[in-house]
Length: 174
Image (cartoon, rainbow, N blue to C red):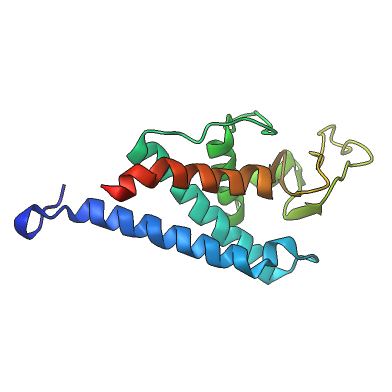
């Protein structure tokens, strides 16, 4: 713990300010509605990338500072390192931020990445490698597909954002 004059806890202050800035940045990005506007281009993916970085940070802070993991599993493909919404968001963030990440792989020899499915979309068949391409199951959502994983904009990213903010509300008040 770093204490300044009169016992000021700089580390706690900085964490609170980071949380507030992340919340404001996410709200600003969502207000642009770029994520919800097809077709996708480099700017769209930049916004999705930034959202994934910020939401992942809030999800991690929810666990570390509030002791509340964002652990819902609704519509999460539990597989490998992905066991709940928190780890799914980390998977997505890693795929978006690390080009060399194996999170882009559908199979050992097939890359499937940067797919945005607006509404319901079911692949017409499995990939020749035998790997199943994750479907998009909802008309009212956007599915982002990276390799064997799928993350929904509303059902995962926005819900995790809202849950993290709720979980961190007491921390922000103290």
